[in-house]
Length: 501
Image 1 (cartoon, rainbow, N blue to C red):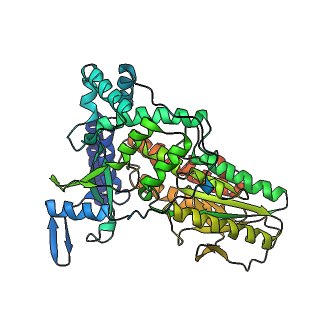
Image 2: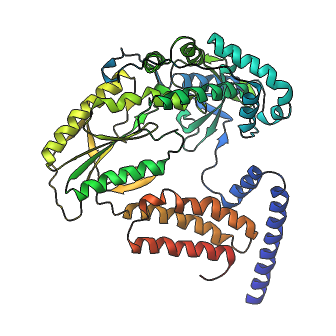
């Protein structure tokens, strides 16, 4: 029996090897996305997002156009923009310089279009970037004329402002709209004009130092790792000075979707974006529309009243300018901001004074959030009292934001890295090790079946990034923690090469 069993297992293993070798040989010759599509099916890696087919609501089954219409109205009404009168008390002195969007030329249009990644997705007009690149020699003069007409007139073409939205199922109950992820596909030519405007607006902001140094998101030369390194330095410096440091980590709900257009326009004018330059931004924001497409059926086109476009080039820069004055609420804390992830750090020797300063500043933060139409997610906002291990502190105070209390925790996950109150990195190492072990399980399961180059692809795509992400921040952890990761890394190499390390 054992002999027959071993023979059958050997034949099965060899058959699987031949199958996967042929599968990935053929696929690898085509496209990387096809490789990963096949690989995800083999590994069953994570939840698969799939296009919605139908939803039953209140006993009624919605399909096709009716379903697309229902999703569109749900997404449009997901965030209701409530405009509050803008107080300029948080703003810096008015910038006396004016931004100017100088004309573009064929060379800039040509290079901008070529810089976009190829995608199989088509926009609302069924345009794709890849075929357009083949005829840029013909299109560049026409596009240049259109772009310059927009820049000089202050009008963003209306046809370039319709987003095609597809919805993918994330998991959970299929009849719940909130369990679907909307993916916005913007017009191809819109991205070109956005990029041209973005380059000019970025140069203006950099020249006059408009965006705060506390902002690390969507800025050249800055990253999550740099933001976390500064956060780490702040905390350790306080430890050296025998001080306590109270960190408050604020979570905003759907911040990008809640941007109030009237408030944003006023802030841009304050920063120096005026006249025709401001007009094109107004046009870009005020006439945005979207259409949900499901199974080839389109909903009606609906206007978008608030927010900056998902997946856009200009949107993140406008968001940075919108929240830029948040650092002016108080000079007491140190701010570290990455897009909408906002952290405030208060240091001091006396806990009572520290809490008082924190609560005073948080009241101003709450007021700033209200006038800027931003909603704080209190359940996800946390506070951590960082202190050396040898210093005991009795903390029986409330940290209050608006009308709610912020939970004080021992560790917090910020920008993908766990910080605990003693800066030991134990929680983060446990989290990394858990994720690495899952990848190792898949590698072990297929170590005798998948081709070597595919196993290496899995290692480099799923294993290495977990080890390398923000490693400069947490690599000062204890040697025992590093050894845990080293053992897992050796196992990963062993599963790839069948060698013992």
